[in-house]
Image (cartoon, rainbow, N blue to C red; front, side, top):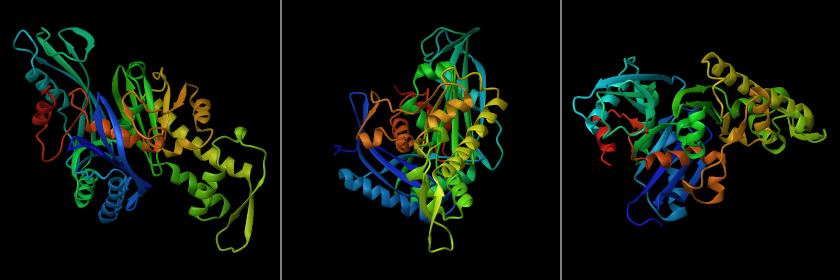
Length: 406
C-alpha cells in the first residue's frame, strides 16, 4: 500500500471495458500496486452515450482497485477518444529580447505556436511541444532555456476535440466522485509505454485497436505529427461473424475468442465447430476455415482503411520504424503477420518498457492495459515538452508555467 497521497491513478474508459490503475513512483520508475478491470456500460463506439451508466461502471471498478491494495484514489488521468478529432502541426517564432532564452520566452513561444482558430463546438485538448529551434538554425532542440538567441521557434502538435466529448468525460468522472487531473488521447497515452525515442525519431505509427474504434498516432522527427480515429474495431469483427453465420453477438464473440485466427494460412486443419444459431434450439456446425475467412476479411478491412488514410496523408513511406500494434483486438493469433503482409513494413506487438513502469505481469504484459499504463505516465509527467492540458477551469499559460517549475 502506498504511504500518504504520493500516488496517482488512471481510468481507461473503453467501449467494452473500464480499467483503473493505481501507482507510485520509486527511484524514477512507476510501480503499479493496485488495479481493477470490469465491463463498460453506456459507451458505444468509444462515445459516452449514458453518463450515469458509465459513472456507475467506473465506480464499480474503482472499488475493485481499492480492494486490491486498500488505497483510495482521488484524482485520475483518463483517456478520450473522439471521432471528430482533428490535429494541426504549427511552427511559429517569437523574438527574444534578452541575450538568453528564459522560461517566460518558452511560455510565450508555446502560446504563440498553439494559437489557432477553432469552431464554437470544439476545443483544444492539448498542445504537444515536439521541439524548439533558435535563430536560423533548423536543428531541433529539446531544452532551449539558457541558450543565447534572438529568435525562438516552437513546433507544436495541436489536438482538437468536440465540446460534447470533453464535457462527457468531465461529467462521468465527477459523478464517479473523482477529480480529473489530465485528459489524453488514447493512442498518445499508449505510445508512452511502448515506443522509444529512436522510433519516434525514425518514424513510427502506433495502432491501438479497441472494441468500438481503432486509433492511430504517427510520430516523426522525434514528436507526434498525426492522429486519427476510425469507427471500426473488435465489435465490428464480431458482428461480421454474427451476420455470416446467423448467430447472436455473444455467440459470435465466443467463436472469435475460442477459435479465431487473423490469417487462414496459420489456422490448423479444418474441423467442424458447434455453435447456436438464432431462433434455433438445435446445435449447428460451421467450418473452422469458413470462420477464419470471415475474421481475416474483417481484419483486412481495418488494415486497408488505416493504410489508405496514411497514404492520403503521405505518411505511409515515412515509417522507417514501422508499426506498433496494441489494444485487445491485437491479441488474436496472426494479427501481427496480417499487418506485415498488408503494409510490407516491420510490425510488432506493443511491449511495455519495464525500465519505466513495473507491476504484475498480468498487467504489464497484456495490451488491454497499455492505455491505462500510459495514462499513469502522463499523470506523473512534470515537463513542458509533453502534452499540455487545457481545461475550461485552467488558464492555458498558467498551466504551462506550473509545468516549468523544475
